[in-house]
Image (cartoon, rainbow, N blue to C red):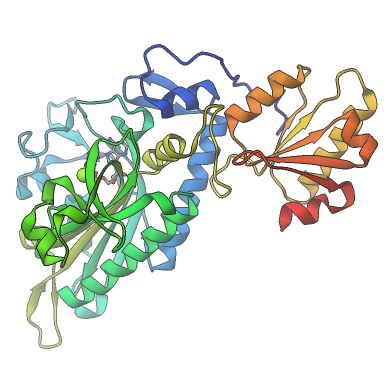
Length: 417
Ligand code: ATP
Ligand code: MG
């Protein structure tokens, strides 16, 4: 894509009403647009990053047998009344509205209830299980706090997966498989070294659920980490008893701020009991289905990457999530030959399937480099009089600033390697 065609622009100053680093940088670089507190639109660069994150999650969910669907945002109260979760005291973030005839509807905050009800039509026999269903779907939550940029918004896409199993044993096998898939996802988006599987409250059956917490100053959670044993515990369940059960002592833990980028949750038969999701075993006996839920917020993940990996110059995207693989910067000035060479380089990259943002604008080098640093594409490739004279191109690594000079004939090989 040619940068001269991109309708968004970078800006020097952070918006005054934005306190979070992720939103400040993403707005300054032209990735997102703030509609109101806790509500953001995704612009061309932002959508590319967002879609890359979704692609990674989708690949990993498919790899463990997930079947993708999309459910509706509009929710009938009926099924939620059955589980008691229509009540605003039980779920305090509902957005509720009404049909023309006055009948109440809600905007989905999560989807355990409607999916469990849906599955009663498809799960009857032990032969129908296990089954794993997931979606990328927009949730609405009337969050009280909305100061964390895209990490906590009132309208956001969630990847929510739900597992349906015959027994606790069968459930537990998938639960661990999903935990492993989550680990891979956080590694692929570049947060592997910063993210811990963390004991948290709220499991049905087992005492705990598991959160995936990324160490981050802007995080709203506090966790305790045992580095040597790779154990992390959310503050809400951090006590003598929990620690003792794990065979360690409280002195061995460090405290850290963290953000919950995902969670996996044993649901037991809490929903299947109430909503009559049963299957018949070999003997014809009706048995409630054992469920689990597995969430990730792609936008929260995107915001967290910005919080954790950016530097004083701007954003630093890891390879797999970056909006483009290469930022091709032409320093042509009035030199027609340099311009031609940069154009040719852009074509070469495109022909070889390498996604490039091509800064073909007529600006000073300093401005172009500042924009490039802010936007944060992993590799910057410079075409200038100097590089042309030397017969090579300069490639600068955004993350560590290292410079490599690569002969023109070796460029594609280098970028694909
Ligand atoms: P939190 O404790 O941070 O409020 P939660 O426990 O309510 O989150 P879930 O309902 O389990 O979160 O949602 C699953 C995932 O969706 C979370 O792990 C997070 O990544 C993401 N998520 C939750 N709330 C938001 C939000 N308001 N904005 C963006 N992403 C969110
Ligand atoms: Mg939580």
